[in-house]
Length: 352
Ligand SMILES: NC(=O)c1ccc[n+]([C@@H]2O[C@H](COP(=O)([O-])OP(=O)(O)OC[C@H]3O[C@@H](n4cnc5c(N)ncnc54)[C@H](O)[C@@H]3O)[C@@H](O)[C@H]2O)c1
Image 1 (cartoon, helix red, strand yellow):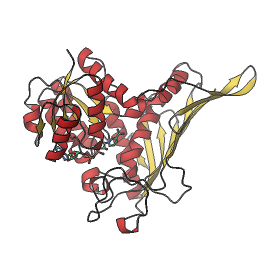
Image 2 (image 1 turned 90 degrees about the vertical axis):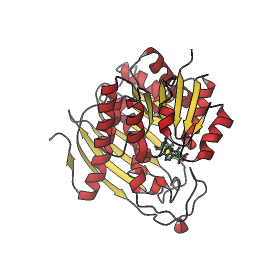
Image 3 (image 1 turned 30 degrees about the vertical axis):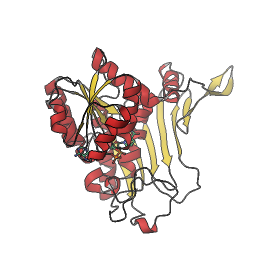
Image 4 (image 1 turned 135 degrees about the vertical axis):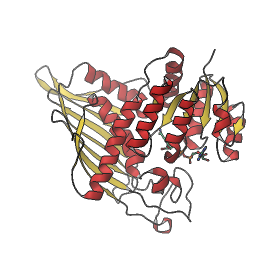
């Protein structure tokens, strides 16, 4: 019997997950969205059984085992906690929530319910990331002591004026939207060292849609809305044992137009790895007494599909979800500390 799931939020990323779930043959019991057209489109386009304009009756469906939460960040905690309290497993889009306190509420509900929570960090499922993980797990780099993760967009502010750029609904801008992926990925590959201190800075440069020249946009621009969140953020994170991570992330920046320009480097004592454009994995080491650069080739995969397959596997076979809620909380803690460091213009200690 295929796993039966429901959706809260059938917008842009909800539809990506609906497509994967349908492709995997999961039983799509319902989609709840406050925009009735989005719920109806889920029924029409993906064969979902029923559309709801409120998530509560969806959660009352006893046949549903798992819920995909793909609503704006502001609602993540409310929807995840409600689903867990209704006895459902949860696949929760990133970022986990708007704060550590909200993340803790989700973890408390998860423990009380005995259900699973998987964070939506799709980049972990990239073939390139798994290739690099293989090299690291095989000990090819030795102790990792420093990392760099970056994603630069020249003009990539999503839904300008809508919920993405409104702090009360998103919790932040480029950092919480894109930085969340890079932080999770870096920590995952570094083996989740314990962060002890954070120093960061965020900038909000483009504030009005009228003054923002762009070529394309994720989501629809809303001229009447506002933008009170960061479009550029940088940070240095120190970990227990002395390792460090530098993060640079932008939605918009006046730089060369190589969009998007992203990557990750981890430097170890015996070797280093690099993920160019998050798609091209390299291992830098020494072989045969010489300095060597090795390009790792991997079978390309549909990482959204593999992510959804993992959701279904975890629910069906009670496997430990990757990433876990606890890891989502650690990333949330770092995001909060970077914003705090920027506001207070000082390093934030996490170990006191
Ligand atoms: N993993 C990724 O690569 C990725 C990519 C994009 C977005 N996301 C995350 O997914 C989430 C949704 O992003 P999106 O781009 O799909 O946004 P979106 O605005 O396109 O979709 C959100 C949907 O939620 C609905 N909604 C809003 N409030 C609701 C409520 N209270 N109850 C039910 N439905 C409600 C909206 O009507 C809309 O259809 C965000 O948290 C975002 O950070 C993740």
